[in-house]
Length: 250
Image (cartoon, rainbow, N blue to C red; front, side, top):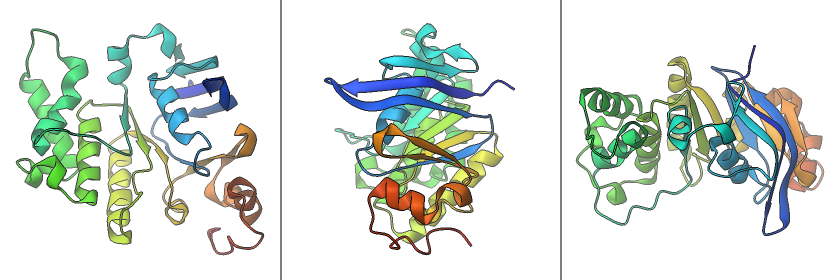
């Protein structure tokens, strides 16, 4: 079966500094995968490469077996949506105005929102549970509310794959659990989930597959039980031996 998303020998560098080298992995449609690793190891870069917003220095990123280099940006955006860590909104946009921007890949220069676009926006807000916030100003929302709005923005693109960059960062434990429950709901709706996760305790039991990006750009791939061993975590996070006791699922 052709993977929905695949990286083959992908490498990337910023200003001559190598960030990723020979990255290989694939995601099957309908899967739920966590990307973990220490700060600065290249998780955000990897997600941006997956969306085509960055081009690899070597190797290839494929969507349904077709290289992203050969696809138009609008076509990619109809299949892949990235929920960033931060969304800077300089104006007093309402939640509905923010989510409507997710329809940009479907709109032409002379075409405004049509019935199908409004249905997609309503469905996105309903799935992300932000319908009641539609008239609120985005910049006045709590952290957890903003995260759900950002997810609704991505869902309005009607993507097959939703990529999330540390969606639980800076949320309290209650909002973290709410967000993970939302990811379960989206997976049940047929959306493939690929999320960079900072809070490792959320990974076991919630993500069927884990990609651990370690020092030297090495990737360890498998289930949470296989990947999140004390030895792997000590290596990847440069942690003193034994300090990750209890992180491995029972």
